[in-house]
Image 1 (cartoon, rainbow, N blue to C red):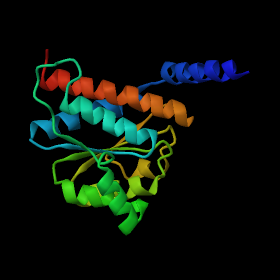
Image 2 (image 1 turned 60 degrees about the horizontal axis):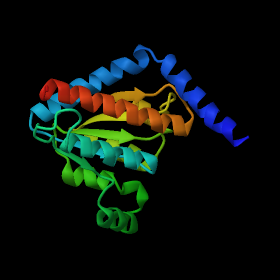
Image 3 (image 1 turned 90 degrees about the horizontal axis):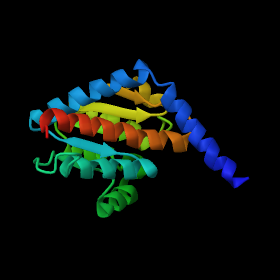
Image 4 (image 1 turned 120 degrees about the vertical axis):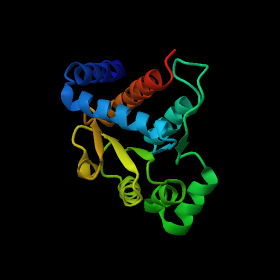
Length: 192
């Protein structure tokens, strides 16, 4: 029955959240600290991902520039590398999709920035290249993946796994994580 899929997904989400421990909390605290320091130092957050993760990157960019709880604060500098369709299509056409984010990281990023990169599997080639480009440029990297982490696990400065390998649950948890991280950053930098 189709209703069973709905219920099963809720059970997967509940299980993932109920079994979370410091494996999941400690990297989030590190990401909060590093992102806060990035913004305090006058630098920016770059964000990238594919598919649903691209939407997460764009969504949280809105929250950095706009607000979480504090409507009166000045926006924080953030750029979703997923948002400019002209850039995305030109880079994909001219260089290949595997370079769509790394070219932007090199053009827009600078030492002291932080890259938030999303990959449910941890093996997206364009995300791997973006993380490598960031590291070459002195940009910190926070990588959000599934519980396994794939290839990105070993190259990220901050690896933020979620407690699931089910893609839909991973994407849902990523959105929860980044909202919680952004809200924490805002509470430190711009308390209400």
